[in-house]
Length: 512
Ligand SMILES: C[S@@+](CC[C@H](N)C(=O)[O-])C[C@H]1O[C@@H](n2cnc3c(N)ncnc32)[C@H](O)[C@@H]1O
Image (tube, rainbow, N blue to C red):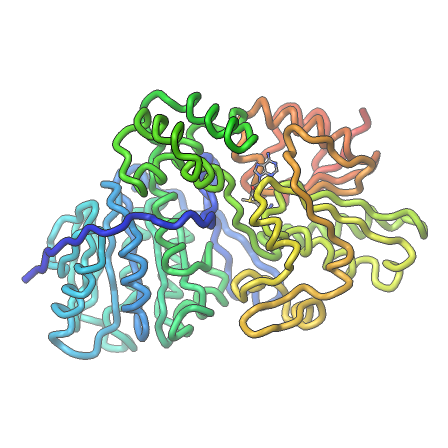
C-alpha cells in the first residue's frame, strides 16, 4: 500500500546565503578521508572510485534518521523543491509496525515532493520520497527499489549504511547521503561508500539535532562534506542538482545586479550564475529567465537576494585541513629569515565570515611562538559580502565551523560561550576585515602570503588570469600563493608562480 498525498507549500523562502558551489566545475570531485588516518592527526585522502553510472540523469538522496529525526526530516522536505531530477529514500529507524503509514501521512503534509511507502521492484522516479517500511532494509539495484530482510546482526532497521552503500554503487557522483538526528552510529560506512564513489555527504549540525549520535559519528569519522541545518541541507541539495537555466536574459540580469548593487558579475562563469538564478526562479516560481529578468528590474529586494546567492559565503576553520598543515610547513621555512620589526603580511581575498583568516592567524602563532611579538603579523581579510564580513568581525562561530580545529588549539585559541566558540586574543588583534572587490579594488603590497581559496572557481579563465597578475604584483619576492583544492593557477599562473606543493596548491612567486 502506498500513500501518495502531495502538499505544495513555500519553496526556498529564505535569502540566507549558505550553500557552497562545490561542483561548479566538472573537474572538482569529492575525496574520501580515511578515519584511521585522522585519528593519527592527519587526514589521508583517496581518489574517488570512478564510475560510469553518474552519467545517469537521476540523482538519488538517501536520508538516514533515527531518534529526533522526524522533525528534522519534515524541515528538510518542506524546503526541498521539485526539480525533476531527484528521488529521495528515507531510512528512518522505526520500532513499531504501523508507524510507517502514520509517518508517510505526516511527511506528505509537509513535503514538496510526493511521498510514498517504498515497494520492492518499484522504479525510482524524480520528485518522489520513498519511505522504507518498518521491519525492512532497502537497497537500490539499477533504478529499482529492493526491500530486503534485515541482517541478523544489524543493530537498527532499516540500515542506513546498507541503503547508502547501494546508492553509492548505483549512482556514483549522483549519490547523496544525508544523516539527520539519531542515536547510535548507523550511516558511517554508508557515507564512506558515497564519498569513495564521488558523491556528496551532508550531516545535520549536531548543535541543532535532538540526538547527535548519528551525525556526530559520521562527522568525527571525517566522512561529511558539509554540516548544516536541515533547511540548509535542502538548499545545498537543490544547488548541487540544479542545472543551469536555459534561455536568454543573463546579460540583462547582470546589468540590473550591477546597477542596483554596484557589483559586476560579468567575469563569473555563466553556468554557475545560471544555476544560482535557477534556484531563485524555483523559489519564487518564476517560469522563465526572461520573466525573471523583468521581475528583477522592478524588485530591488530580489536583486539583493540574488546577489547574496551569487556570493557563496560558506567557510569553516581548517577547510581542507591537510592543505593547511602543508602550508604551515612551507611558511615555517619561508619565514625563518624574518628579523624583528619585519612584519609578516598576509591577505585573504574572499574571506567570507573570517574562518580562513583566523585559521592563518592561529598557524602564525604556532609557527612564530614567542617571536611573534617582535616580528608582528598583519592579516587582511576582504570580501564583497557585508553580512559575512560582519560575522568575521564578531569572530563567534558554531561548533560545526570549528570541527576541524585540533582540540588543544580549540582550548587555546577559542573561548566557549554557550553553543558558540569565540576567537580569542591574540588572533583577533592580528586580523582586519574590510569590504573590497578583489577584481577591481587596489590590492595590498609586499605580501608574504595570499590565501585565495574557493573563489577562483567562480571566475572565467580570462578574469582568473587577470587575478594571477594582480597577485603576482601584490606578493613580495618570496611570496606564497595558496589556492583551493579544486582550483588551478592556469596558463598565466604557471608563468608567474612555481609549485611548492602542487598537491596542496601552494605556489611561490617567480621573479618577474
Ligand atoms: C566559497 S567562499 C570561500 C570562503 C573561504 N575563502 C574558504 O575557502 O573557506 C567565496 C567568497 O568569495 C567572495 N567573493 C566572490 N567574489 C568576490 C570578489 N569579486 N571580491 C571579493 N570577494 C568575493 C564571496 O562573497 C564569498 O564569501
